[in-house]
Length: 275
Image 1 (cartoon, rainbow, N blue to C red):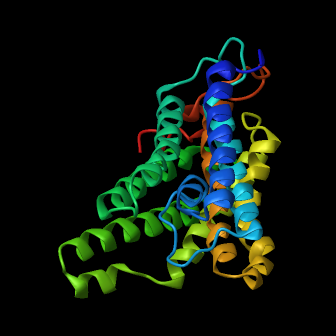
Image 2: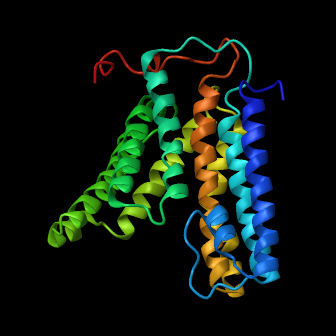
């Protein structure tokens, strides 16, 4: 508990969520109404006709358990101790990472994400892409590909949502890049995870959460044979992405070895530092 800066409040909040999840599971089995448990576990309204069977309740409890773990990982904060001295670029990156993780709270309070929430999330992730760029420059090649891929996917997502809200469907079709968006997002994620792996500021566990996010949906595909609720529950693997965002921010403020770089500005060539 003393290892992390905000361990006690994080444990209280996480424990409250777990207790509520257990109560919701008991209510679902006793009363046959799975709606409350579904909302807690999948952060959305239950599908019509979803039955409160033992299997469905178990799947939802497991999905909720993943979100409970995400709560703990996010809220506990960095490792306790003297934080390293960092420059403005690092502080802005931490702020963007935390804001992007916190934006997922919208799921918990609205039935479906409105267009403005999607735009907000995309803009926050766009900030993360840009602020990660100096770190990627230092640790991996193809730096232009990483930046371009990240900018492409989040600008496309935000633009498509705005055009849809304005009923500009032709512009929306142009902004939507289909499978190219998924490929661009994957390229950025792989290059950033590679850069983190080679950088002393991030723990290997943090990187593995990012890797797990990429492969978890494939590992859970067999659950689809169990029915619609199982396919919906696969969405809970998004908790791994939230964990990666928060931990990436925590690691930047955790005590580290003296030889680890602390300033993003130091990672840039003098000729491009002003860019």
